[in-house]
Length: 159
Image (cartoon, rainbow, N blue to C red; front, top):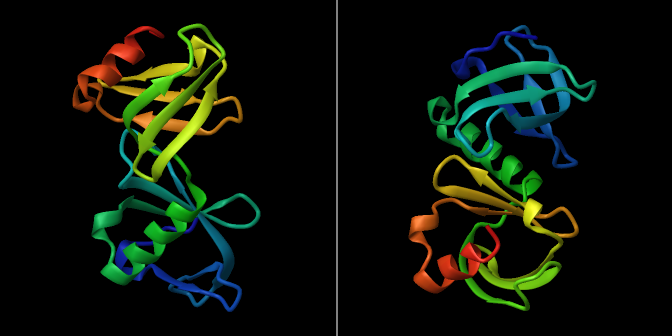
């Protein structure tokens, strides 16, 4: 692993749109992939920059410590790799037995998915849930208390 301070971190995109990391010694690493260490618990902390060989090239303690342009570049790259819609409201469930079809409002619009079984609903701490559909897409409920009463009542039937 190359120890780099956030000030020495030089990230750009190559002509193919992949991330390029330039080290202080002038070494260039093409095809760098950012990976969050704690994507749910601390999404803005602990980012590893991985090389094409799977080795860690650099570690970023906090995204907020980076210069704005570098932070925006990393956030855009992470967003393009991570797909975890956040559920804001449950509109309907087809049945209270599984499998069931759920219609939900997310931060990315309304969608429908099939819940195979209650075991596909996992608690995240005291307030959050992670729900996996039959295709493995994961949906996040960050804070149950923020859901409306109807959504909470529907969820209670599955927990």
